[in-house]
Length: 472
Image 1: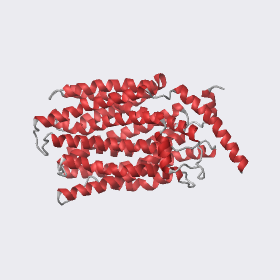
Image 2: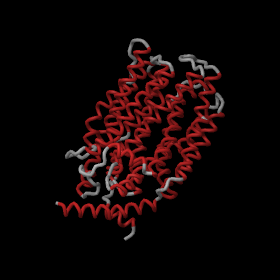
Image 3: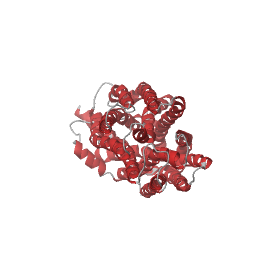
Image 4: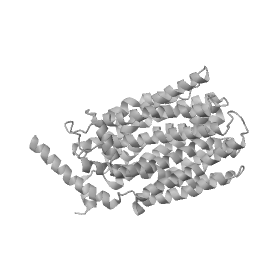
């Protein structure tokens, strides 16, 4: 029997409805993360009245907590045992607090700048807690809903497509609200409130839309259940994950690509406003994110033809060209800016799809080596990196603006500040993208290698099942 036929016999196929429901679950994460990436820094400096350095520090402090929070939630979700499974109770119970804490981040309290600083630290930390307890168990469902190489790429594409729908939805709302409401404070109150509500609803759709398929998978005993007597201690799990060489490559690839994306997103409002001289930064941001959704299907088709590595080289190479051109762009060249945003979207879609599509393959390799299924541990590291990338990117930008003499609420910026803005729009992301491409060269799990891993896992799981039957 060929590998493809063996997989068809072993894995119940995902329906379109299940894929759509699963993808919808990331809409809230995309909406909230994107609004934070594009707008939170400029909101803190120009609306809340916090210095760029303090504004960047707000997110950095939140990530110090995430360094503890993410792995803990990953391990706890792996060990959770309920009649509804390991992941679904976490997602369902955290959905509403996730929306409430996000809304609180966009209020402007009275008081001194120091009081505001600590208010945003607190609300950011609380939001990140509930982001983790929703999004980490959710992302691990990729590996639990399917073990097919191409179906996982499909799931990742659906998930990230909905994430981008949420992302551009937040930007579109921002464009409409800023044109409808004059007061800057109320603009962000309205935007934060609407995005909070629209972020919670798709999470509920995901839970009730994918749960029946997850139950079928569990009934067929395809997803192995952890044995508490043989579970590896927490710190040993981390050590084993870090000893997984392909996982380290995925971590590096994702970290560099995500850092480049987050730095670009956070600097766009400053670049568009102060360098290009435009009134509204939501239009270029919408072009990047909106076109990236259309690029998801071509990315999926290209991946099936030339593999995940080939897609990454192609997409990031195109993105590098656009990033370099943005550095040399001059004020008033609005049409050229829009065109470069569309070109860059192909690379953005690639950076979203490829690392997340690689991760389940790494999890299979870990199970083959250790005999345990620990999606939560690996997804915790990836989710943590996503958040650290956002925090570090915003902190770097805030620090650079502070050192370059950026003037809050000023219409004209000094030349040093404009140079810093252009550097973070061009050369800095370019270096990070090149480093990601270098790591991708050495990533070892190809389609053929993954097929071999699956065949060995089938034998290993059969032996484990036979051993459990004999013991019982």
